[in-house]
Image (cartoon, rainbow, N blue to C red; front, side, top):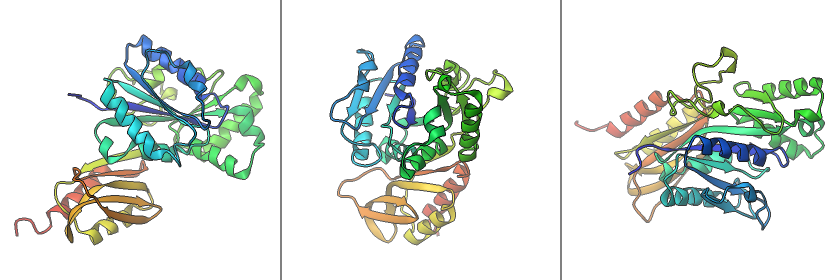
Length: 317
């Protein structure tokens, strides 16, 4: 039986930014470190092209002719489950299509049925320096590029050999305005120091870097986007639960799970997005559990405490 969750690394970035080049290099590093790796790739076309870079001995799942953030988001959860069931892995790399929103990819990776099985270690976004600087695209796509940078833990300003230093500094400043928490690195050929993905001291701390590196190399200890999973042993009051969600609304992006309600028997599939809670009765029985996705202001201890109190109101009286 698996003793620990499988690491998940999400590679994000607009079309042509260099994600596949980065993935190829990271897989080489993982092989040298003798880690067992799986890959999940998503392409918009009907034929896979980028998958040709994946070594034959690397478990691979492909999702074609669709975007993770819309038409096949549910399939991502299923493909992750398949990788976990079919292979004993240390990590899974997800290369999202260039028009995917990182938050939606994270959403798909945090399906309640995957709780405890995977742990999102980082969102790595690759930016094409000249593409970002010139902005020769629609307002909608420009906004998407900014979102890809906003939700990243590490932003690589790639292809710096194609622009001068002033452009690099300007792009870096722009990215810092979009995301003040991420570590931002100007790179060529998507080349990064492999140590950024590992901490030999503690792999579960959500760090990119070992503690012994120089101070200017550190990034924040926790993910910019935080996911909190809470098992739910007893039913809770629906009204109180919704009030709790409203209190967290400023820092809460998504919540979901399987829960029991005091008002009516059974298991309910719960979803919360854009401030709207939805409860749908399940035909099958699932283990009650809740998953919260938000910024790093979400406090696990506070959420757990309030949910525990909700479950125990009236017990023992």
